[in-house]
Length: 471
Image (cartoon, rainbow, N blue to C red; front, side, top):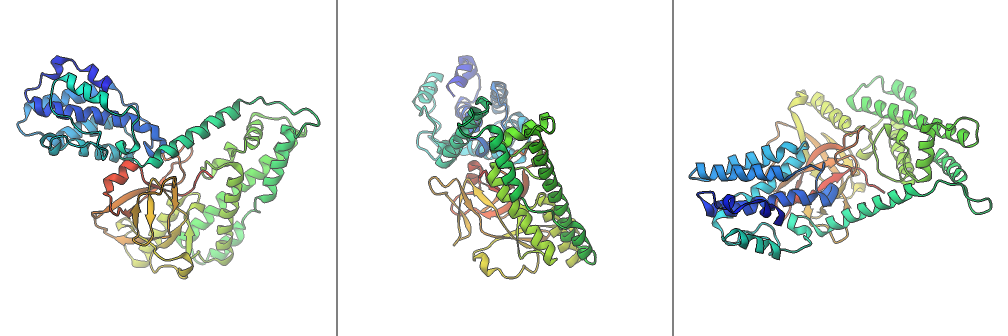
């Protein structure tokens, strides 16, 4: 903020014919710009995608502010907010959920109270407010008195957000250090060589991964009832079988390469280094994205395949679907909508979701719902969950994620707009919210009761549901 005020000359500061409004809103604009820039320190809880907001955005917005205040007797709030947050800063933004965040901030800072109320608060903390009117020097002095280290609450964040970002940065540091270690073979008699360790891990993975699922047998069994969910089951079996075959063939080739029976190609060397570092080889991420270490990923893969093996054996969908097991959960949810549309003889385009969070234990859910599905396997990041009142609450200190109860995904026709006190919570496949070059991460927006806090506060906290964790 100090740097932004240094960009403004005395002539600029005094040019507007409505100085009282201009100076207050200029301070709010500086705070808005600083918040957008500094939020990236919270990583995934800050922005889904990091944007290059710069001084030009601020300068253009400052000019717009001065011109519009001079031109209009009544402050044109909607025009200012649209041009600044929607066009100028919003021009950088490509993610819809990030756009929602920018609009939430501008609505807080650009309002009638910012001008009318003395010492208008810009945050829940006492330090951050619009100071009383004065010359440019008085504003610089006020900025000088602000804390040098910004508390997460200044951004509307929970203190856990700082902890989560620091853990991620520490993990990245250790991964970098690990990648820089010398790749040399151990001296004979002094522990395992790299090759011996990789062979051992490779054999362990080969033993643990399950056999292929019976695609042909399942297809024949389900051929009499070609429902949308059965189509999804067959597609998932195909994808997992392809993944399991890829894993087996690459491990067999790797073992041959280590023993000197085939030439170690670039792809085999990449698999070798990944297994040695306990990472997932990139070639194994063809079916679904994950940031788990190799051991946790292998155990997770076994559980995923088990769900579809049970479904294929019984030819009956499970009562509660573990949605994280699907390689393409959006396809599964679309199939549920299609099944409901056929059942009720309505157009699938007229259907949308209603979300009912279960307040009972999963053991009590013995039958599938009449319409829709029970879904489990999601985790809440950036917030906690009150099971008794079925609403969002502040997370406990050091509680970075919490398990979400089973949710009833119920298709409804011509759903009304989201009511007051409901937070539209984005659900992502894995923790990298922007996705990667092969897979998108966003799956669906789930409406949750916001509890005592307003939906805007959860937007600032970056509260979201994740289908899988990094461990």
